[in-house]
Length: 325
Image (cartoon, rainbow, N blue to C red; front, side, top):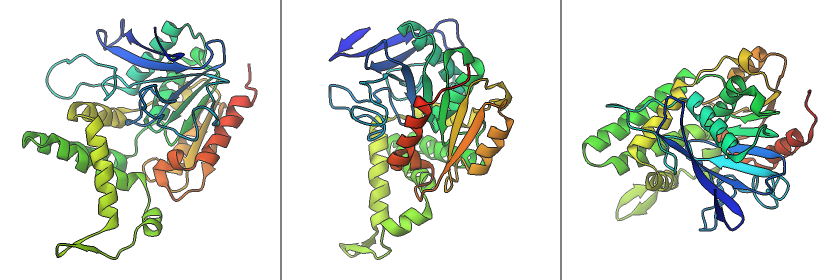
């Protein structure tokens, strides 16, 4: 364990798993004797959920961090970098092709970090998007390690349309890499992804359709926005990490009947990647321990990042309520 301005960083070797020889990087914040809460986000999220001393901001501002709905002054907050992803966690190279890393592997990595930190049982696991998938698998594989599960924008399986779109994104990156332009391919894939994370309603309100003329050529505000998002993503990711986690999203599959943990699942009415009906299908199959909350938003799948007050209130309520013994 390495001390950094009172917060803790480190890595844990993965042993006795399908990825033995790899390691998972974590960050923890707040009093070690406070109720422990693990927080995981989408594939572009990282372990520094509350930020770090080098200026890396937390990826869930206004929701998790000092003075927010989940404050490390009151909770022992823990985050990880996904194995195989763009952060400090690794996965061994096991032959040609894209290494297979599943949400079950990530759940086992979470358990390894809890063991390392001496956390027998989490007060709560909070997961959004890919992190929500990991939480659902954790609730099925290691239900004794968490008292309650709160999931945003995630279900027991991927929707075929979402899988098809991610397959296109991976092909874009692969073609670009073959031409020596992997970074451009990653940016384009992210731009395409952003159109699925948001909604036509948001874009209609946010961007005008009138072109901006530069040197005789028309450009549009929405193009600039998407380009900025793509370039930002390509500076953090490489093609291998993107392929591993994108593929992992598509491989995700967990039987809801096995999730033996009190579970709250938040759906967004405008989310086309994880539509509310898919979440409702999952909650109906939970073994009497599940409930769903639907949030109205024009932000689509990304509403868990944008609707901070609504999301924060749900978190505060779930953390405070009593759960069955």
